[in-house]
Amino acid sequence: MLKKIQDLLKEVENFKSDSLDEIEQFRIKYLSKKGIVSELFSEFKNVPVEQKKEFGQMMNKLKTQTLIKVNQLKDSFTADDKEYSELDLSLPGSPLDSGSRHPVSIVKNEIVEIFSRLGFTVSEGPEIEDDWHVFSALNFPEEHPARDMQDTFFIEKNPDILLRTHTSSVQVHEMESMKPPIRTVSPGRVFRNEAISARAHCIFHQVEGLYIDENVSFADLKQTLLYFAHEMFGENTQIRLRPSYFPFTEPSAEVDVSCNLCGGKGCNVCKYTGWLEILGCGMVDPNVLEASGIDSNKYTGFAFGMGVERIAMLKYGVKDLRLYFENDVRFLRQFSSAF
Ligand code: DAH
Image 1 (cartoon, rainbow, N blue to C red):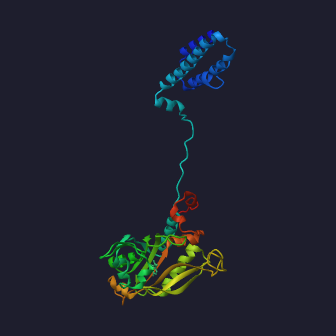
Image 2 (cartoon, rainbow, N blue to C red; image 1 turned 90 degrees about the horizontal axis):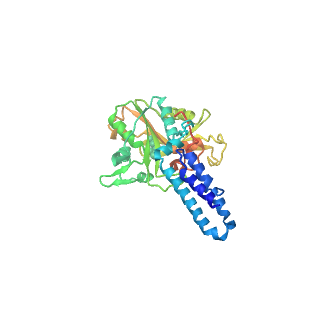
């Protein structure tokens, strides 16, 4: 028995290899649960008492020598060698996940695309604004309760610097810098100090539309919006206009489309009315034209403004606005589009 251990010790001492695989096989042969070392240990009980001490010592020596050998051989590989020897260049590469556009971007692009077919250009304005462009030039008198319709985040007071509450502010920039005819849509982010819920968020997106020229009429506005509704929600969509109030338009209206889920019969999405509100609009108030230096005797115009998340909710049947901001890929992956 002792002779056997001695032979094994020699074998361990003489073992050499430059292959990680072989070294691993060697380790398994000696040191695994069913390896030589543990098998010999299990024979310990059969060893005569007077040899037990020597046998034990030899066995421990065999075990440690083998461990040292394995570690030495493994350490002789540099980190790079190890990597290369384990690298199989014939394996196929791991595929890269391709991303998709955010549903709000898809719908925003689609809105812009629809109006561009009617000759509308795209314009953008700043998100940080002054009181003039967001309120005063749009015919909100100071201290007028209409300002409360849009809870505002102020950055500075006196003079007021604020986060725009609507993209109607871009109208003012356009009218100040361009001569009619003006035909433009303005997509962008807006900010309101509102409690976040399934139907409201403190950041969302709007697209504003503005058309100013000689002889622009309310009929032009209606036809433009009908075209938009057909393109966005389908050929059979109907629209209806309800009288409303906005300081910057006179007359003003809110526009509903027939519910595309129940076809106008009534369901829980349209609250059994058959109609869904999609935007506000009206004829640009002469005060607004004059405030930006446009002759209101010569020119008329219409404007409209819509929430992109709202249109996207209606289009995709999403019931909770917050999903658009959580960026959970399981939600986002469901939308794909050419836009
Ligand atoms: N700015 C309005 C809002 O955020 C939306 C709006 C209504 C825009 C009527 C318009 C308009 O241009 O004519 O609630």
